[in-house]
Image (cartoon, rainbow, N blue to C red; front, side, top):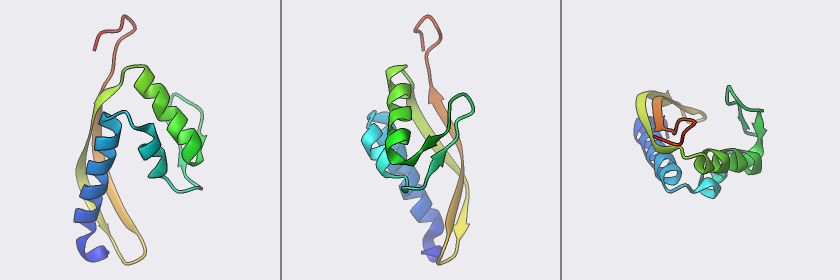
Length: 98
């Protein structure tokens, strides 16, 4: 896996962006392991895929769209692969304009 860590991470990022931009919270939740923790700065910690799915459903309901992960770095070995990315998304202001 380490031989093509960058390619693996790029594929994972593309799949994640596609799921987000389809507002498919189930696919997003399924991409997390059972012990995952999502720690958004403005919400409570979401633990495990079901809570993570619920968090993203809330983002979609509030009008967040156009998610994009732009790879900064990727690497790893045959046990661990990592990726770092710049992310962006479009949201709406309190009047509902994006």
